Amino acid sequence: MLISKFRKPAAVLFWTWLACLLFLTFWPGLSQPENGEESFINPDYFFHFGAYFLLTGLFLLWKFSPGFYRNSRAIILSLSALFALAVLTEFIQKAVPERAYNPYDMLCNALGILTGFITWYFPLNRLMKTEEKNRENP
Image 1 (cartoon, rainbow, N blue to C red):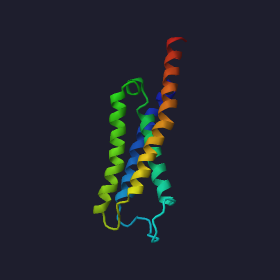
Image 2: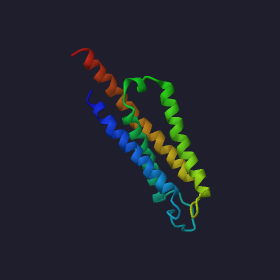
Image 3: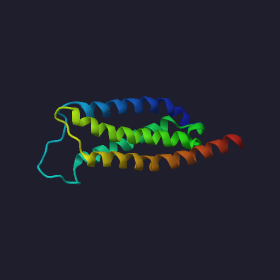
């Protein structure tokens, strides 16, 4: 299976990216400067969306196996854990000096996870089924 060769590097990338996200999320003083107005068009929101989009994609590549993709309970638990991470990190920021809770950040995190799941899961699932058929009928 060609894609299975990418599972180990994807795991390393997933954990590295998660560590970077947590570092950036909890390091004091890395917040965006306040410009006085709250706007939905903010470059920080695009970063939040992209960061969690990539995290979800790396997670799904890491877990790329028939056992995972056929187990709806594992998928639901994994998505729940990613959503919990997105929500909890924003709430924990209240306790970090010079950081603040922002519900729009949380929304962008969640949208990144949802969009990442839709974008990555279905093509990978189809690829998994194609590779299984090719293995059964050489």
